[in-house]
Length: 292
Length: 257
Image (cartoon, rainbow over the protein chains, first blue to last red):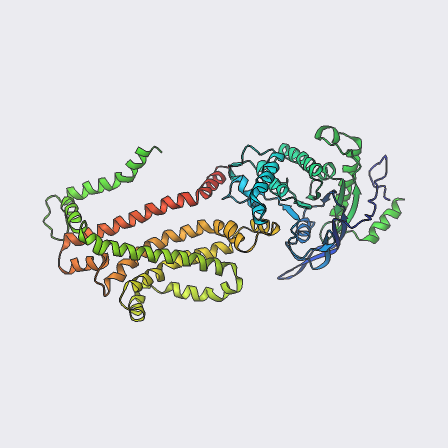
């Protein structure tokens, strides 16, 4: 495997192929937007798997089709070719066992509903019995630290708190797969750190499979068990990297670990490389050969 | 604002205008311009009593029924047309055509089609008052937020639940803006529909007064119409504040930051 430009104590480990049926499987995904004046290929050829209970970060330069990819995976948008499989069955529309947290928290919560009603709505829609619903909503609000504001309206809360509501809504829904589309891109740095820890905590509590899209390199390394680096558009998988940091992570110590530094430098270099243009397998192979 | 202050703002200018009017008409002998006290007396004697039940209530009844159907139909059709793209493309030119027809010209036509009765007057009110609600609803449905829409889809909120929990509340600000216009259009058409071939109602009575040179009575009828308009506006405000409290709160906060 590669020893990249940065000095590495240990080589970065490749990800082992997953043996069992993956929770989420993306195969040869391609998306071409048909627009006046020609086609735009946003995503060229993406293939990767998520095992059950994994927390994987997708990181790529801005404009690398991350949102497009997530929309295709979540069934909100139809891909041009390739397949997405959730737990072995093909995704053709938004699947029941998937929840999405969007970047624009201000536009993903219903402003005419209270915090509680927002979290409750998907359950109500699924005809979950009232008592069970109440318990789930309570637990979800508690897990994101918002059990004190159920009667507020989303717009009365700060941005970070609004995103917590959106996360609580996804948690209460009990999805098998949770997709997050740059959920913390629009909140301030301190709130962001809190929310990152919240995601790790929820992930451990629920055992849910999380695909977390971000453009923030540090965030991807800090959060993920694995980081998938995307090339710039038209997008391919540039690297699939295992994050061998301890399971217990905290903002102060984890980020100070030498291994964290190495991994983030490595991802950073990959992203810089990605910005130069789409990397085909051949070029990568040549590059690797020349590095040896 | 304290309640007292609000009341002061509410009645301040009207009282001032009445005083000015009283002062200007003090020595006047003009037959066509009434004096405030005289008009108040006429207002009382003309409209409180039989005429209230014979003319005002039937007018109000027709207005209420007409507005109810205009608003309800406007919302239902607007939701339907707004959420179905082919229907919207198909109907849009036609809707603009019908909207452009001034509803008063429909009165003779509707008289022939429906006959001279309450149904005709209600139909006239609906034919004019439906447009602001209908077109605003169509426009609102078309412009629902794409991220909220994706949220609904990803949680499988579809069909009736989607309309009830997402589309209808999201469009309510536009609907209310339409309703506000519909109320005044409805009032105008109520009067006009009663001016043709009618035997009761405010419009009919005011025209009768005018033809018989009962000038103070005619003026008092106009005041009654104004009061009805004011009443409608107050009811509207009351309802709007309750239905759209979230909207005003949201707007206030986004303006602050």
